[in-house]
Length: 368
Image (cartoon, rainbow, N blue to C red; front, top):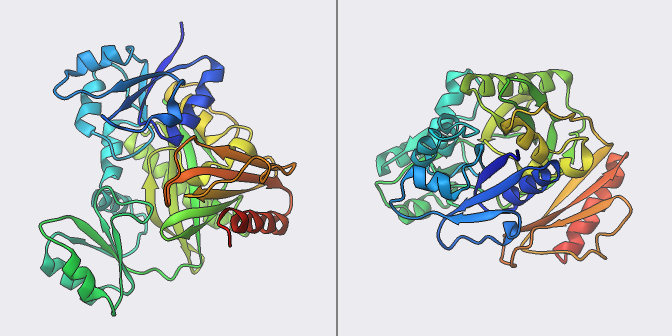
């Protein structure tokens, strides 16, 4: 009897997880909002559009009575998933998703586990904003508690523009003001935890961002000490075990004076793990599918060194990314500024060579 998985969402992450699950015999349905773009998952399974005031039982039936429900994003309807959880497992569980849906709640949770984070203030009114501006080291990053990602719903506050930003905001509204961290590099830790509680880790990944969005990743991150790896993995293990988390999770971090400072948690497969589809024995996408269906987790052993370039509002042709160890992945989306349209993975055995190839492809893609 085939296993049926419902994916909440219809973007490229849903696409890549489905493409990891279909070859091992799994079937998929996709729960989407009215008007949501489904190009990424067309022909990969049944697409079910959410209807107003529909009972969870009716929705569960329309989804094909899945064996498990999972997500490609953290901005989901927690109440809906909690109700669907009465009919089948939801992984990650709604409680974990709720923790990471709200930036303030996430930071308070990390603090409760004694995991170091940047100084921050909750900003719900103008007085709290003034206090944050007066107290925190600048630049200050002001981010909405929810729906703030990839540079959206965020402001960078300096001494020169503080008044301008204050005038743009209206209250009541919910924000988190974070202090500037003079970090040396950004790295991410990815892990998968199964229903049985088994955990596998991918190596730390070095990331570079542009305008708040990931632009390149390098795996494994060079020059990461054993102590840093152990620290990051301990933090992540504590997080997933505390929440009984099932699935792939990403922890984005700053490295400051050799110490690991946690920036954000993504309760899903993550952009900084896309390289794993070509650079590890088991991709992050397949390990997420394995985790939520309680299959044994796959090996995260590396296939050399990998570099990944994001294609943001730009694309490349197969001919432009056709070198022997270069792999182009396009998501089938229409072109829009800053939109994630695809990525390129480069495999090799020399960091300098991979960095050089990434830079050449970046200049080609972005016409620099």
